Amino acid sequence: MFVLPRDPYPAPPDAERIKKKPKPKSKSRRQNGSEAEADSAPVRVSRHKRRREQQDGGGNPLTTAASATSSAFLAAAGTVGRATRGAAHGTASAATRTARGFIAFWTPLKLTALGTCVLLVAMAFWMIRSRQIEQAERDLNPAIEEGLAALQDGDIPTAAARLQTAVAALDLLGNRDRHSDSVRQVSREATALNGLASETLFRLLEEADEYVDKAAQERPEPDPEADEPPPPLDAAWVNRFGGLYQGGWVVMEAPVRRLKPTDTEPHRYEVEFPIRIGSDERPVELRADFTAFEALGLADAPRTVVFGGKLQSCRYLEDEQRFQVRLEPSSGFVWVNLPTYRRLGFGFNDWHREEQIRALLTEQSHAINAEPLLKEEPVETPQLPAG
View 1: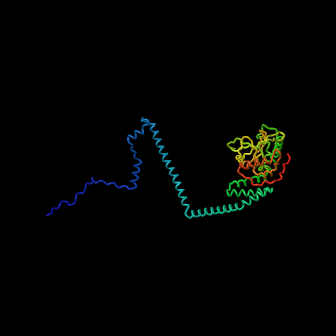
View 2: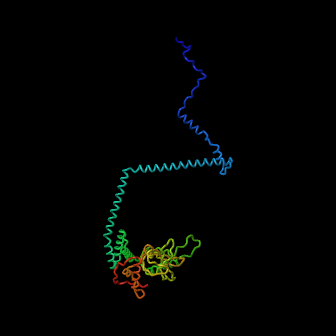
View 3: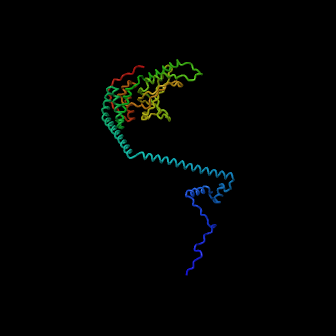
């Protein structure tokens, strides 16, 4: 026997007890809410840390103004740190992009083309250089022989040209032995003989003195109200010297002494010029700052030297009332060969004997490690004009 319940269905729950379930928020809203809560939520700092921040270096409590200053300083430091990190990151990013662009530009095809071009240029340079060396080897000995023969025969222009060709071949081949240096030496002597100035140094200074005297006579009386000073007395002479004499060679046999070097002039030498110029007897300072004199070991005491150099300048120093002649420092050299010395026109006599000059030239050749290449044959020595 079965007994059924009065109501087989359970009673419905009480309406008041029913609680509405909150609707689930979307994922984005939950994320935004959490970010807002994170931004708005205060950072919890322990009481011990807060107490340390509110104290100075000695442990004393900070005042309200000092605490505010400390907070502002920390905030500024944080801002600077973030800006510095941002700038460094931007620089690194720009460098990275540049490097990637450079790498991307050089494709394998472009690298192959570049390597081919470099190889072709190197091969062309090597071929040209090889041909120049071969030509220098073929020209060297004939140029030396022809130059020395022409110099021995008195054909100075041909000798200078052929010996310069020989020197160019020696420089290209890189020959620095004693014989090669001797060829360079005799080439300098032939070049100086071929390019001697049109006037002697003494006559040149006399002409300069005439120009200075003329300018002094024509100079007007000084005007204290003038804006510009009058032109120097040697203005006209400087123009004439530059057009006629500058760059010409002079060869001298004179006492030379070493001067005290300076920072700008490490090689300072003065040539004694005892002759005074003009009616006013103006003195002359002759400077020959040649590195070639270093091999001679010159000192403060003057010593006779036979040398050659190019005229660089000839000025009249108005304040000191004297002339100053300078020879081009890079052109200077000492003389070695007696046959070329005879071509200069320096005559021999009782007070200027050939044996003394031969001994002097031999001493100079030993000092510069050069050997005479010309045979000493008797040559008729031309005499210098009187005066």
